[in-house]
Image (cartoon, rainbow, N blue to C red; front, side, top):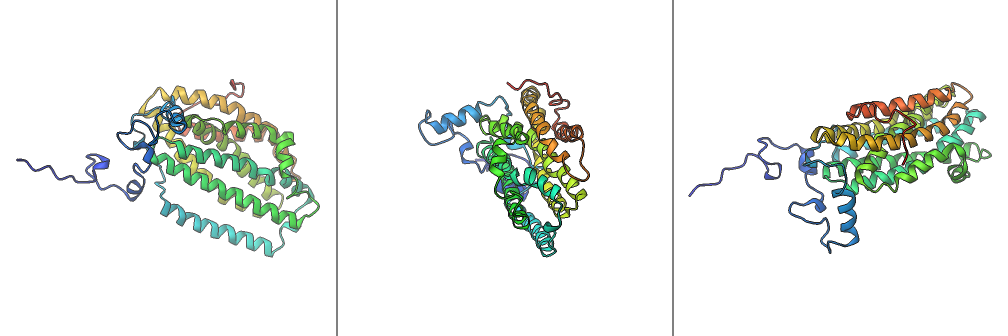
Length: 346
């Protein structure tokens, strides 16, 4: 009679001959719809709506990898580390808001810049909330808990931006009661031509049910493109117009965006490395959504270009946004995908 060989580590990780990290211990195979041996995600009739949805849009996705559990978030973010990080970041944000409120900084902003804030900053909570919903969906339907957790933290980051945008909207409304800020955002979002490309892109992303397409649309294309306009370029122009608070807050929130871009690019590169045919799948989606992103930025750019001071040319706004997207796609191993705004939007 032989004695089974004593394992050097936990069996869930196979014979890896090392102690798993804290990140792996708390993240590995925590999605119960993906438990080994299950034929359907949910303990229901195989033809129930929930099972059919996951079988169609997750298991049936053309983006396939033999073992999605082999993916790792470059930042190895866990709930514990995320909460600690964002507690520190929120302390910084609260300190900035208090400091500038005490100094009456909003009242000193020029009328021309307040007008830009009313059209560009305040309505931003609508697309951000739509992006947050898509991010939550990606996490819900993702084929690995390593992806689910990363997407969940990104959804929380976007909710943080919605909250900060709403807070700043109220502060600006109090400082400039006749500006329309705090009153006109829904009308601007629904009717202002500057926002209709963004609205179409975000609302279409909400019905991109295939998890791989939703991830590509939001994480590899739309958010990298729009964040360059609404965070990076906006922050630079804000500083030129004496709005140092907007510049500083944009820099703080941009750290969340960069963290999302890191894990998203890593996931794209992982998919291509594991199965080279995934490059064609991803490029098809990237080209489709890049055309929508370019249309969105082309319509939105004139608002930023109307700033009283330091206004960039419309073409420069568009070029910068496309370059930002290209950096993420390059990191994902997708090269020149999404560079042609003439790509089909079908």
